[in-house]
Image (cartoon, rainbow over all chains, first blue to last red; front, side, top):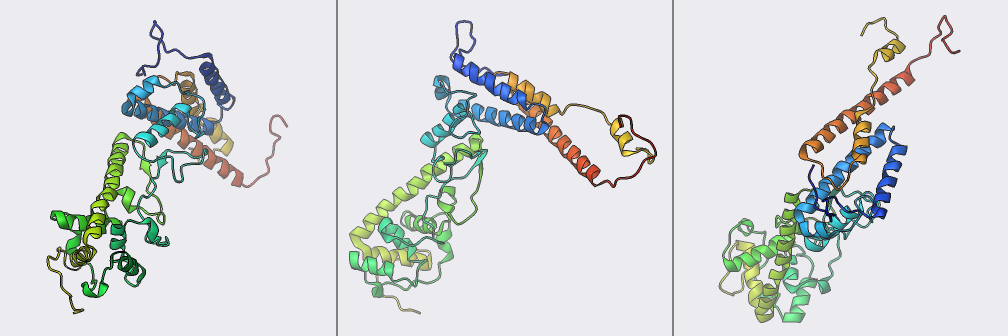
Length: 277
Length: 81
């Protein structure tokens, strides 16, 4: 077995207060009262192994927090299926890695053997479009998916005097817009469309409330991957700022280039009225 | 298994053992939670868990089979009755 470097006395043995020893004893007695029930024994083994797995992950990911921790290894925490120490680990993941304890993870009876992540993107499938809460650039991307809805055009017409009639008509998306590699200018359009389309490859941006949630395992690779993906997802939204600025500077040119990219896979360099052919 | 063995004889012939999960659970509950299980110990626990769960399922299926067994008269009074 591996020592956990808890607070130790001079003889090297971990220091536990009376309360912790009492809780441990009560936990054992509770188990002992049911110990001849094989089903309960299987549940106990599963729970202990699961908790040990999370302790190991806690130590691996947050060794200093583990050393400083005074949370009980035996007393149940907010999520009743887990000790206070494991609950502390969940909180650390939530604070330092990605939002774990929001959304549907708020039921104290919940078992977090696998976990879901909340979608960060806007749901196209069932949400009412609330323009007031969307960035202008995101709204610009939405116009490809709400072709029959003049509300978006009216918004841009009123805010930036965009003249829809002088812009190319929106056609079927050109397959090149989904290419992995683009030049700098096309890249920002490609990222925008991928974001609106929920096809970024980033789970935080691609999942929606309308689908059965993906469930993730408690292992370091998955937690690290989700942490990086969460940062990248935030960067996606951060990148919209420069598109917003381009709209503010010259909305008409922005829309011309964006529609041109959607129709042809290239960013058009000339502004002219295009017929419906 | 002999074809002429009665269910009772079959039961009596079975090895009797405590479900290994009970023994392991007791061992785990006695140890200090601050001592992490090694990889080997986790593997052992998972194996025992599989065996223990399987044993429960087997016993449960036997119990259901016995419950479905039709009653039949016998020509002697069992000991204790």
